[in-house]
Length: 314
Image 1 (tube, rainbow, N blue to C red):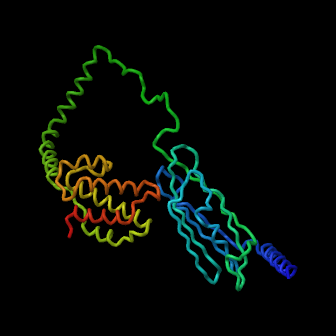
Image 2 (cartoon, one colour; image 1 turned 180 degrees about the horizontal axis):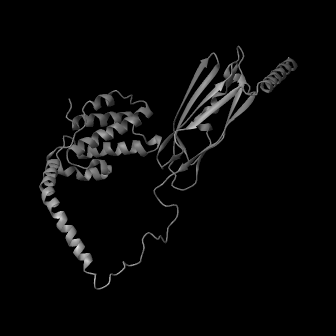
Image 3 (tube, rainbow, N blue to C red; image 1 turned 90 degrees about the vertical axis):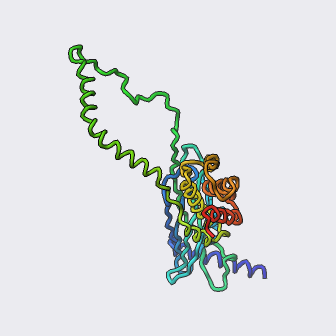
């Protein structure tokens, strides 16, 4: 009995090997990056498509996010879709990556090996024996930064030579020319002065445009249990809160969450300052933090409820 079992296994291995040699291009891969350079904290999508010829499939575990070889990058989220067509099996994958590195070393997604096998009736993927491999090539990204790569000790940005002095007999021409320019510009200044003052006063009296309350409807429709949807919705929530504060006279779009809270003493708002500060901090955490630090669904719903009270929308 044991001898017969060994013969069956050997014949299966030989059949898979012969099949792989006769079909060298059973799996094709296309890959692409959303962009070739990122700043620290940016997100970048690494997408691709895997096409398997009829009668062929890959070991799906080779596409898990844990199988990626990353240098300086981290996986924020991953998505994979499998479709069966008349032309064979098609896989579409999307890995969302980010980097928190600050050095100048290049970021890299290393080579990824996918194993494939011949599909046969009654053979489950868990019992399949790989009959070949296809390699997804490595790709690189550049890390951008506003900081210099090295300390610069000397930069010749300006010419240190003094202006050429005029001869004593004509040196008076320079101040005389400046006086003539001012005299020529005086009528224009007298005409434009009142007009400019009226424009400045009108702009100060005009209230800043507030947020559209209908934006809350799109936030209410967000599936808060979906981490990716919740992270994107936090961007909309932060924009909504900052628009409301800007309409109240606080330059919220140019301030951090902590600086925005420091300026809340000059306006009266229908929400507690500390509660608003917590929601703004969670918006920044969702935007720049790691995936495991994303605020939970109940905190997102609490932030939407605060925005509703802040906009006084019933």
